[in-house]
Image 1: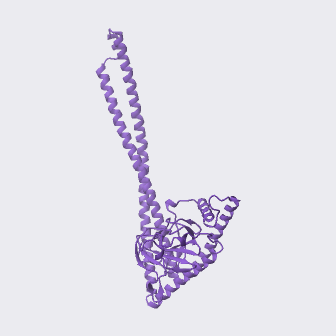
Image 2 (image 1 turned 90 degrees about the vertical axis):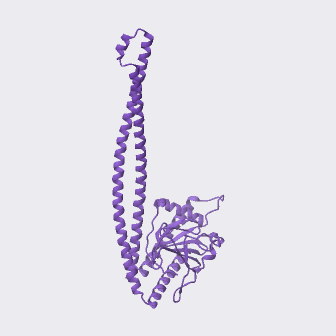
Image 3 (image 1 turned 30 degrees about the vertical axis):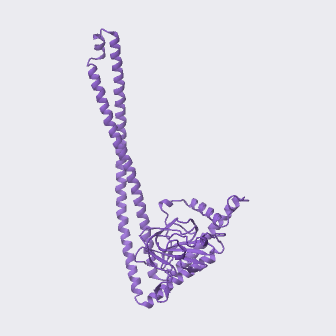
Length: 407
């Protein structure tokens, strides 16, 4: 089983840009649903009191998890300089990737807005050309009617009816020309406004491009720092005995974290949730990829995998295998950015080596909901996901729980 790590970094994608108040409300609702709220159709005697109780319970859960997180961090990270440096460098990489993703998202939005403005400008320019052509046609028609001034035309006409018609034609073409000229003026004014807006968007895009280059440079520096730390860790554990000691230390750290979490969650159980056990053999894999380590495989002398390891693409969405509540979302030695989901009835699922975490401790999740992005945190040499299922704190082979033999 991969080791344990502590620290915290999570981010919510844009698609997850929920405010703090909404998150609390969502958490309250989930706790009411998952924690034994009345079934649909059943009368709720005191809904406001239930909501207040659920919110207080949610805050208590978060506070307890934060306490455990601080404790694990002090014990597992701070005492080991290289582990502390790895945590710092990987969290820095994660934050820079988040910032870079945000810049790229904003740049894409700006580019889309610019495309809309450019399309409107082209349409306005086409309208100007159309209106100018129409005006030219009206001027040619007026020329064909006669080049005489209206007064001269009136004096030269012997037929009053013909004179009336000619004046009506002059009046019609005059109004039409005035209308076309007004349309042309309005279009030209709008084109000038669009030119200004396009210039502003171009400036913003240039600034975003500059920021993106700077963040890519910082990201590369953070990656280089991480590489140096990993090299130092490898040098420190150059013998089989030293490597085994580190793996066992990481494993012990994870076991201690899970014991602490189990004790804390006993006070805030997800009552009546037997969904997970009923889904044995029906779960979807949390990520697509290639299975590279199986439950029970030997990692190093005497240390075995307590879960499975799936090689995947960097940034691939990591999805919750079942509904539940996040009880840990932080960095842990050996597992990097780790999310643990409580599914009730003593069942937990663990998702390690992530690049980003989308959910914070205390938040509800639904089956198939993206909760992280796959990565190589925790010292992995490639993007991969470590996945475990635990029952009563004991690891169980995850593969029989999935409907497909391989991810």
